Image 1 (spheres, rainbow, N blue to C red):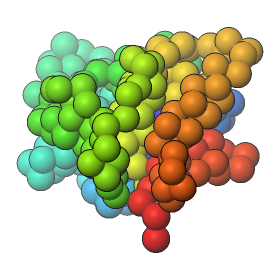
Image 2: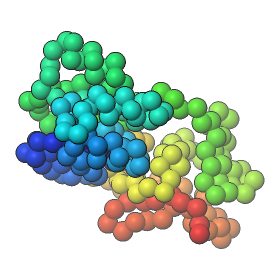
Image 3: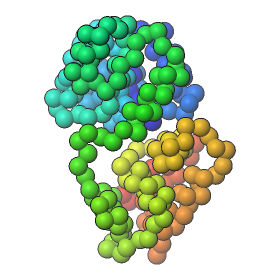
Length: 225
C-alpha cells in the first residue's frame, strides 16, 4: 500500500512510519494540516491516516475539503479524542474509520488493510484502458489492439489490479494483499509465476511491454513512450 500519514507528533509518526516500512508499505508523512492537504490532493494514495488535532488545519478540515472536491481515498482518523461525539464528528466529516490513541500497531495495520480492500464508493469505471490494452469489467473481456486475450481468473484479477495502479510502482506485498488477499508472505514464487504468464499473454507478437520490472521495488504498468 501507499499511505499518507498526517501526524504532528514526531514520536508517534516515527513509530508508525517504521512499522509500515517493516511491513513493506510505502508511506509519506506530513507534520501539519496544510502540507497534509497538499499531498493528499496532489498524490495518489491507497489510505490516509489523519490525526484530528493538527497545526495549520485540523483533521476534520482536511477530510471535509477532500470530500468536497470528490476525493474518495479511505481515511482513518487517529486521535486522542475518543468520545462518542468525537467519533461521530469524524465519520460525519467523511472519515471511514477511527482509532483512538494509544493503540497497538497490529490493530492499526489490520484497519488499514481492511480500508484498502474496500471498493471505492464512487467507483463507476467499467472499462479500464492502458495504451491499446482494454479491460471490460462487466463483460470480463480483455483485448489488446482489438485482439482478444484469454486470461485465467487470477490473471484477470492481477491485470485489473495493475491497470488500476497504472504509472505507479506496485510491490509484491501489495499484490499478495490486493490480488490473493494474503496478509503474510507464503514464501513461494506465486506472484512471479502469475506475472510471467500474464506478461507473456499481453506482449505476444512483439508488442511493446506494458508491465516493467522495477528492480528492488516491484512492477509498474505504463504505456510505452
